[in-house]
Image 1 (spheres, rainbow, N blue to C red):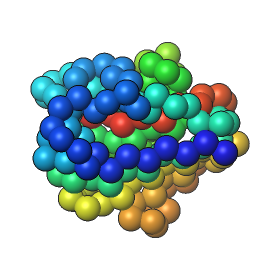
Image 2: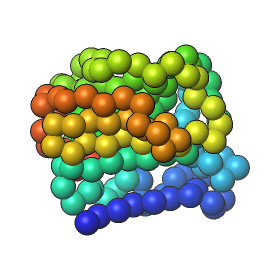
Image 3: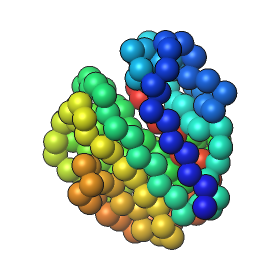
Length: 156
């Protein structure tokens, strides 16, 4: 089993060698991971891949804005394929990404993201689940993305 964790409890600056900035620029600001300029998709992933395509990603949200922000699992190295749990400022939704096209799957959970929320997405076989603060909020069966050993954090 492979696992990866980071609390970003270090000096302001580059996230470091344990991270790959897929698109946009991320940095550590006040001991928190922060996306760069708004208006573009910004993705960062751990440099270490997970052991299998059955994996999950979890993030604690430090601050929010009314833009798309979320966490990916079963992703490829570019974030073009995988599963995403994201909040758009008013609700949580699950998405599948196939060749860079994101499609909503399942129902949404109506709640704005709040500082301190813990968002988790999990893919095991064809079951994709989204959790908010440890409570399963969305669950779907989907077979669009069957492999991917990366996880990621995504913002827009």
